[in-house]
Image 1 (spheres, rainbow, N blue to C red):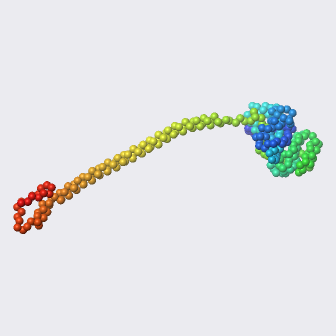
Image 2: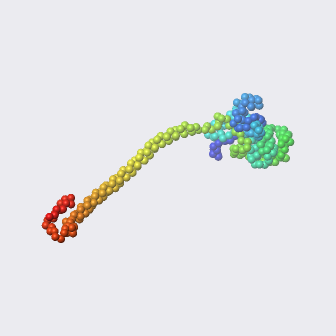
Image 3: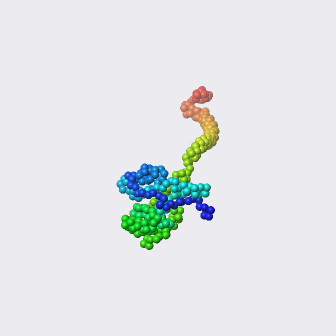
Length: 314
């Protein structure tokens, strides 16, 4: 941590620390298999299953059944990890089986869908039979001759080429140069990814629900006041528009009233002039008409007009 600024650790454990079994279950979904394992492992483990941490990988499925590789490790074997990380400030990123991590690297490389894979670590030999790019057999041994016999046995069962990583004493095996510590530290999620971190060592996920509820409450209050504010400004703006329009209409209406008054005055003057024009030469017109109607021997001695077009003559 001091030399490289490391913030988290992935721990790789030898296969010898695990119990491993290939178990067939009438289940296919990951959730159902996980729930069934504590009951199924009672007949395979020497101690109660709740004293173990279980991990599994579904190797194959057929119909409604599945074949699963199950690895179990006792919880008390992981106590030293907690003690080692105590007060260091380092995060535990995962606890894994080093053979499975190396096997992931081998399978993902596509070297061979069917092969024998050997991981040599110190004086331990971890052997896996690979069939159809999935683990089909696992065995751990600390004896070289026993490991050699085991490899021959698996080769007959599965066929294919033997590959080995680490210090390989077997001349016939193809050597792979995997840095197991680097492979484990990479912590890639491969074909056979199983993590054995106890629940109490898993990082606690923050419950954002209360924060979300609080934020929604604050947002609701803000929306309430904002809605009122927007409604106020909207109504105020509408009122200003109405008042401006009212003043405009009033101005237009007063102009129309004045125009109408002026028009009425003009009409009145027009009527007066027409009446004056019609009555100004009325007497002349009447005399002209009388001169035509009166016989030649008649003398007009007196002539006057009255209201309602009455005429008085002598």
